[in-house]
Amino acid sequence: MFAILKLLLLSISSQLNADQGFDVRRHLCTVTRYDVAKDMANTSAVAANNIPNGCTPIHVNLVARHGTRSPNKKRMRELDKLASHLGELIREAEEQNLSLEKVPLWLRGWKSPWRGKLKGGELIRKGEEELYNLGIRIRERFSELFDEEYHPDVYPIKATQVPRASASAVAFGMGLLSEKGGLGPAQHRAFAVTSEIPASDIILRFHDCCGNYKDFKKRQEPAVDKLKEPVLDEITSALVSRYGLKFTRQDTATLWSLCKQEASVLDITDRACGLFSPSEVALLEWADDLELFVLKGYGNSINYRMGVPLLEDVVQSMEQAIKANEEKHPPGSYEKARLRFAHAETVVPFTCLLGLFLEGSEFQKIRREEPLELPPKPPQSRNWRGSIVAPFAGNNMLVLHSCPANSASKYFVQVLHNEQPIPMTGCNGSDFCPFEEFKEKIVAPHLKHDYDSVCTAKLEEPEQKPASSKLSQLFRCLLSLQNDDTRSTKDGL
Image 1 (cartoon, rainbow, N blue to C red):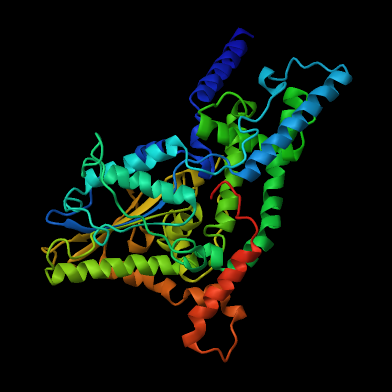
Image 2: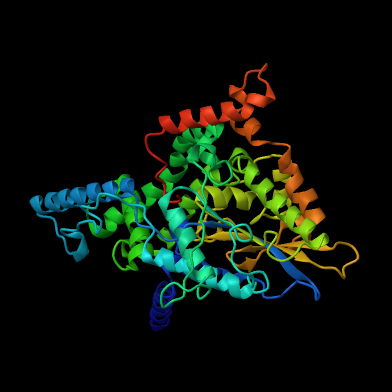
């Protein structure tokens, strides 16, 4: 009997230690802060440097998501409704003389931290710091590329017109060019951030104008909700049993949303997040990852095929850098970095176009445009995790290297995801790929799909002349944007 009791106590102690080591901030899908995601990448990344001696970087492409932001208006409205419903649940329990001993004190009379706020979704201070520090680290890491006097043609900085993206570009530029000017005690300098109007920005906001994608997403959202229902129902039942309140499935979903916002924006992990056990958090994270996979990732080829204009822009910039290097253009006369700031809807499709976070057999399926299996349910491990794929300030960097001593290939591409080298399945699992091989195996299969054929093919008239295609595309895009009274308000934006 004593031995059984001892084993039971050891089991409880082991579980408590495991729970104490659990950090919910690592499980927030696309609401994860960059410092947390970067730390996760550091612990799992391969430390080896695969860059051969004699290779030097000659160009950098950056595609980054905006930094940590406040909840958007839709989320704030949901939290206000949650506050009202929680009040009703508490009053109902009191009227029925039910015990409230199991109900956390903070839930009684809880109000949203964002109540009364009229606008949302803006970049917060943590988000500014994420991009500012990223700019400093990139300048230090590639000092030979950023040793010239700033010029917008040499270091173009581009962003969407959404304020949190353009503000992220500004914060990054302040870090990149810190102490490079003469403005104020911090020696800042002015720099340019350029944007396309939403109706024509098919490089950074291609999802805005892609009619076929919008139709696909609208059709798929109910199916995604069905996929998530068993998880929400299971956890709702556990919450009702644990706290004695009649929570609904919607309550559970909103409490999880509150947990993510509190943990990411406010650094509070012991209130809404404390309602869930680690195993429940893992299931909720997986449900979020499913949604990201189906609606923005590898779940359907249209999710990333519509990002081909961005891929083409990246490759074109590298080809121009190679030409400048081969022709020995003088310093200051050619581009050395192209720096872009956008959204999860930009970074996730671009990540898929590069074939990242795939196993070998999955990459071949992508090339054949075959559907992939959904990410496996916990406790099984999976590559696809939104907290790593597209956290706040998440980014992909493509660094073009000149390797003159290499007889087989003089130019190589290295891919860095969240600043860490990441294997490219399409390049035999290497993160350092010959440029021509990169174009042949990773880029070329996508280029048979131009943006117009992916996004508007079903709307095209057979007799339409190519000369008018751009004008008609702009008109359709303007019409599409006009019909969208509100932007998508998912957490991933």
